Image (cartoon, rainbow, N blue to C red; front, side):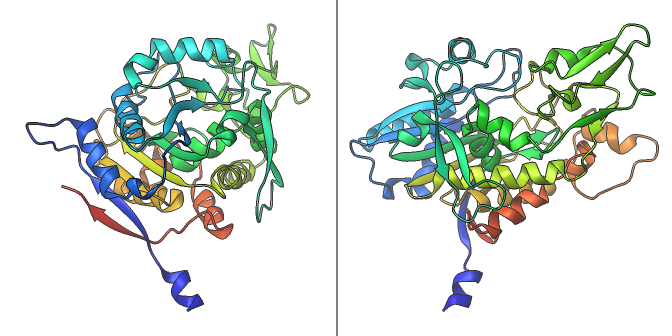
Amino acid sequence: MAEDKLTEKSKVFFTSFRCRPDEGPADKLKRLVKAAGIGNIDMDGKFVAIKMHFGELGNMAFLRPNYARAVVDMVKQAGGKPFLTDCNTLYPGSRKNAIEHLYCAWENGFTPLTVGCPVIIGDGLKGTDDVEVPVAGGEYVKNAKIGHAIMDADIFISLTHFKGHEMTGFGGTIKNIGMGCGSRAGKKEQHCNGKPIIDHDKCRGCKRCMQECANDGLVFNPDTRKMSIDPDHCVGCGRCVGACNFDAISFANNAANKELNCRMAEYTKAVVDGRPQFHISVVCDVSPTCDCHAGNDSPIIPDVGMFASFDPLALDQACVDACLRQTPLPCSQLTDEMAAPGFHDKHDHFDNANPNTEYKTCLAHAEKIGLGRRQYELISVK
């Protein structure tokens, strides 16, 4: 019996973006989540946190508010009290405190009028309103620092834009939950084991990386016109790595990405353990880097479709597998990397698009700590 339990597969539901003449993608999303069983959750009178990313100002790859409205409508029909939520960022930008974060969400189209519910920043005004949540089976994190409002909710739903990422290979459900629900202190804890280094031969002194650093972790030498890392102030968030167009910045600790992946999986487990949960991932506009940037590159693969599951790990695995079956799009970061001199094919679109990243550790560790299963049954919804 125990062996059967280990080999049991999680159900992941999928639908393409092909729509009937009388419906759009948001309508089809409703059909998908209904088929996936969201109606089995008792939402009557319950507070329902819908975790998503509102996009950085200037970025246009984030999910349109229409998708959020579709999920909100279904929660309200079931008698739930939904709110959209995200936590503040470590780095400078338009989402580092609740006031700027709300203005950013509104400017990007997420208002109570458009989405049909309030938008609440999960870790409060300055990102300090968090609660310590035990991580069952945690190896790297014993108590995760999660936004208070998110943990106050009775039911947790994640709505994820699945895309590439400059540190974790891809940004999927586990990243949306683990990193996204961490308070500013929680985000720092997840990043804490990595300190980048700068190759001065490659550094152009453009200072682009300094615009991404919120902690005075970068120092510019006007004599050499080169950047250096200040290890006393650097928190290892990795924003500078993604900001450098010349591959001058990398992590000194080769295990940094792997440890980040493990901590992220453990933070996700802290968020979802012990309460009803449901997860949705929309695989479109698959940009090579995160929606946290104030801009976005062109997609690396064609739009795939929408996925839903009660299992966040199976959902990420299914999305990865679907993406790897796609043909790379021309004139993208992926095809540029593949055409570069000395290219070494890793037979993986995410590894090829961002060669210094690694994501498999996250999926393996998530399974190890009991977050979900990597084995899944894919069920198509027409």
